[in-house]
Amino acid sequence: MSQVVIVTGGAGGIGSPICRGLAQDGLKVVVADFADQAGKSLAEEIGKQDGEAIFQKVDVGNKASVGQMVERTLKRYSQIDFLINGAGVMSRAPVQEMAEEEWDRVLRINLKGTFLCSQAVSRHMMQRKAGRIICVASGRGVAGQPRAAHYAASKAGVIAFVKSLAVELAPHNVLVNAIAPGATDTPMSRAGSTEEEWKKREAVPPLMGGLTKKEEIIGLIRYLLSEPAKYITGQTFLLRTPR
Ligand SMILES: NC(=O)c1ccc[n+]([C@@H]2O[C@H](COP(=O)([O-])OP(=O)(O)OC[C@H]3O[C@@H](n4cnc5c(N)ncnc54)[C@H](O)[C@@H]3O)[C@@H](O)[C@H]2O)c1
Image 1 (cartoon, rainbow, N blue to C red):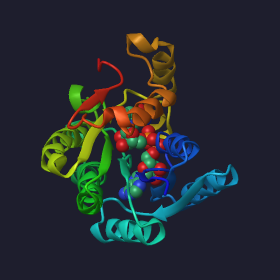
Image 2 (tube, helix red, strand yellow):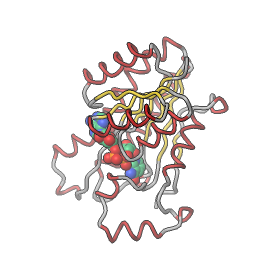
Image 3 (cartoon, rainbow, N blue to C red):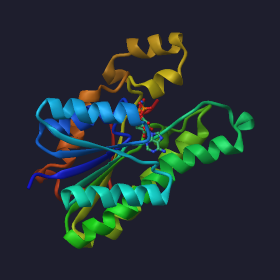
């Protein structure tokens, strides 16, 4: 039986290359996302290229919806080997102008969503005595982010959550790690920057803090899901030194 991975935010700018890459590696991929159209067409595209993928609509911040995602995945594939918590949102405003609802929305999706998905999937993984969870944090969770304090706080929360859950799950042979990309070329980060800011970012060489490439992200994920990484847990892998 080939391995099964759920990728939340699987239809997004970072999630979709992860889904494509893991499907190419022979995994069965559950593209779990709130965006129906993008999610369905990605699952179809993977199917046409001889991969195995299904779309599962989910709101990661809603416990019942997360429960359904896990239930339907288990009904279809009987097991979940890996969970990638990639769903996330961000917006920009200085703290004084930030609406309370916007703070709640970002924390609900980025942090509570990571908690709810990890909680539901890890129950199954604990029973199997096997599994790996990777959470997509951000360099902003380490360095902070002016005009996006809610986002930075949510990602710092994800990093602390990962450290805590990794210790809880170690006796059950379930590994939990975070990856923290720097700015990556996706709709989320473009929407948060002016055209001028974006051009400046693109001009910075990667080793000097420039954009994170999507192939670096999938490369790191492949490593964290591989046999040699079987004793690595509770870690956060920064893909750029935050500046
Ligand atoms: N783009 C960057 O520069 C960057 C840098 C570091 C970390 N990240 C993180 O990477 C992850 C993916 O970001 P991205 O840049 O691909 O953004 P994106 O907007 O392209 O993708 C995010 C995906 O999450 C989905 N989503 C949003 N709310 C959801 C919900 N409630 N339930 C389920 N799915 C939901 C969206 O539909 C979308 O497909 C996020 O967690 C983000 O914080 C992004």
